[in-house]
Image 1 (cartoon, one colour):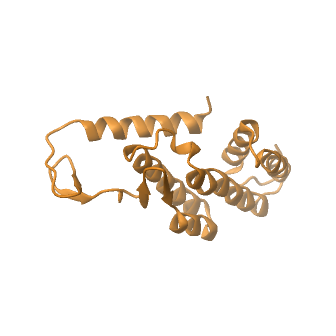
Image 2: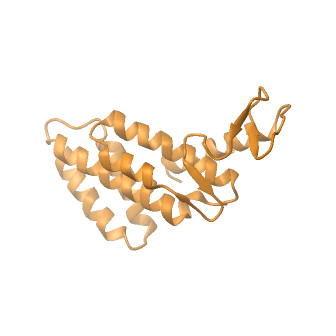
Amino acid sequence: MSTLRILSSVTIALALVATGCGDKKKDDGQKATESGKPTATGGGGGGAAKKGGADLSALQAQIDAAKTKDDIDAAFEKCMGTAIDLAMNGVKEPDKDPGYRAACKIGLARKRAAIVIADSTPDKMNVMCLSASMQLEELGEEGGPEAEEMKKLMADVNKACGL
C-alpha cells in the first residue's frame, strides 16, 4: 500500500473516530464540533460534498492555478478535507468517486508533474520530485484510462529530476 494511500486512510479514520466521540449537540441540519458549536455540514475544507459525488469545480480551479509547492500543498490539504467530507456523507471509497479522482488524484498529479518538470534539471531537483514520481507510479499501476499518461509523465518527471 502506498504512503499516500496509507496517509489518506489514517486521516479518514481519525476524522471518523473524532466525529463519533464526545458530547455533541445538533441543531437543524448542522453538525456540532466537540465544543458543541454548530458548523455547516460538508463545509470542513472540502467543498460541497454529497452522497454520490461532489462539486469540485472550485478545488479543480485551485489545482489548475497552482504554481508552487505551497499551492500544491494547500490543494492537497483541501483534497484530504474533501475525502473526509465524502466519507462522512456516505461515499465509502472517496478515491473512487469520479469527481474526486479527476481533481484530487489525476489533476493534482498532472499539475505537480508540470511544476516539477518546469523547475528541475538533473543537477537541481525540485523538492517535489520524489512525491511526484511516486504518485505517478501509483496511478500508472492502478490502471484505468489515465494509466499510460501517468507512466509517460512519470518518465518525464524522472528524466527532469535525474532519477
